[in-house]
Length: 185
Image (cartoon, rainbow, N blue to C red; front, side, top):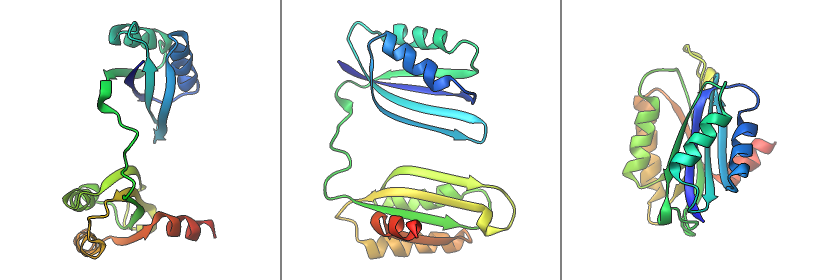
């Protein structure tokens, strides 16, 4: 079995995941991982599937496209081979959550992610909700990240806080367990 990434993006409506999963089942493809979300009115789904060598990229694309006829979506298929590792993140990476709150403006995501990239921090999940306007509580980003043990947390925190000041954002950096415990209350 080979690993294949299937990406589906388009206008949201009920039945998309059902159509995708049925088409994959019909081709005897095993869904190993899924990340699916709705952004405003746009469906986005990424499926990592195990497919036999007989299931070519063209066959997979054609089958999914037929199964999704009537849905306004685009299908993309990419074979991964040995490129997908179950070892990521590394054992010594620490899970953290970075949250920012502030007025909506251009460059917010770019400003924060430039700092995380500079420090070798991997963003594993990002939620950004921008409802517009100057009310900071209407505009929030939540970055789930893994921080390598080699990163000096004090330096990362300093650089993130400096970027947040430049962007007029309030920022919080917490270990994921602390974030989850505080948000359960």
